Amino acid sequence: MHLPKATIILSLRTYSLLMLIMSEVLWCLLMLCACVWWWCSAPRRTRKLLAALPSFPQLPLLGNIHQIPRNSINLFQFLEKIAVTCDTTEMPFVFWLGPRPILFISDPEDVKGVNNAFIEKPHYYSFAKVWLGNGLVVAPPEIWKNSIKKLSGTFTPSIVEGYQEVFAGRAADLVQRLKARTTEEPFDIMHDLAYTTLEAICQTAFGFPKISESIVTKEYYDAFHRCLELLIRRGLNPLLHLDFMYRLTPASKELQKCVGILHNVSNTVITKLIQERECAKQDNRNEIGNNGTHNRVPNRRRFKSFLDLMLEMQVSTPELSVEQIRSEVDTVLFGGHETVATTLFYALLMIGRDKNLQDKLYNEVRDVVGDGGRPVTGADLPHLRYCEATVLETLRLFPPFPAVLRMADKDLQLSSGKCVVPRGTVCAVSAMVMGRARRLWGPDAAEYRPERWLAPPHAQPAAFLAFSYGRRACIGKNYAMAILKTVLASCVRELEFTAEQAELQLKLDVVLRPASGHLLQVKTRNLK
Image 1 (cartoon, helix red, strand yellow):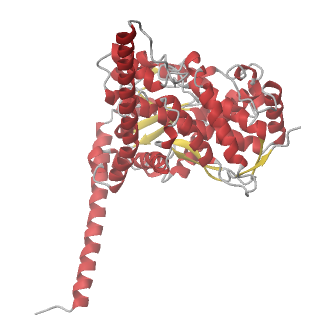
Image 2 (image 1 turned 90 degrees about the horizontal axis):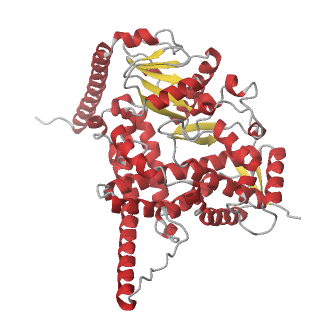
Image 3 (image 1 turned 90 degrees about the vertical axis):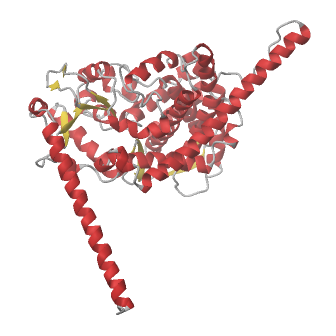
């Protein structure tokens, strides 16, 4: 007996629907069982110590899991709510991921205590290990301690000064690209800025003048940004926090593909530079053999790249593997590209909304650098005080990394006396929470006002967390401030920016990005 074809198709569809329903029910049961186990395994002492702190309404067993943001826009709004609550209550805020607390620190003295007491990062950072390996950002404490000793001297003022020609060159290229767009309607300038900062960080990290021809491609740019999106999506789905679960998803395969593109570039350039150094050594030996004197092959660059410094370290530290070098180079590319681009973007957006601020900045640049075509030099930077104030105010309100996390490996009494941080708690130290607090910055904390940086008193140092604070603070502050001031001054000297007045909407894709209301119009400045 043969069933009609329509009946067979209907039966298959019914079977598929039943299997889908059963799989969803199974997922729910697994999640419920995991939550029960997680809840029962959590020390009651932890819940008791943090019970008095502000939090969102909770569900039994689940805690606040049902309130985890669904996307990057919701994630920014979620952090905004916490910032307001911390500011009004003057208390830390606790978010319960099931029975496990994430504690948002809201007092500068508590930030000092937490960031200096805890250097371990929670397992969420391990999501990026496929990309960044054991680089400084994600490395466990034992590796970080060893690495920071070697890398702490790689971005000193004297080394960064050697990069100034690169910064000025990339700034000039950006100005020319933007001049070509002066006839356009308001547009998204973010791509142009990201391209510029990616070129600069690639040249200073790798050291090759023509590095952009092989690295700064659309494929590399797209892979870089897709990695950020995939990492934040994983972070927002607790079921995917388990490695074996994530490896079963299409997103995992896509992440591996994108990381492969990034690593292929890093590996190629590292291999090329190693070969270049070997050739230089051989040439030097040949010169000695031919002339009997040591005539070094002249350095074709005026600065040592980050990769040069790493390879020099490898000579005295053989255990420094090529894989670890690549991890550190990838970490520098990650930290020095997107963060600088977004900060430049928000600075241009803010001055584009206030002509008075833009005129003040232009007048300073004209007085220090002049209206001529000479580039911004390292000697100019200390005199660009309003430019620096503009950068700092931008970082205060729009920190590239709005929060960093630390894992408490012991109990800690907060300096403010608000609570004891129990061992096993994830501490969230938020640059956005601290940077927008009225109790720290005054009643005008929400206003964009660079003048607040021109005269003391400023808020406490631990209230400004754009470069983090304490033992795992960002080592690239000198680099970031130099390139930000150079590019911003170069742009304002020759161009005028006008921002749309629509409401700015932000999203959090690992770094703080614009979602809407962020278009800019560019005009060539009439120089007198």
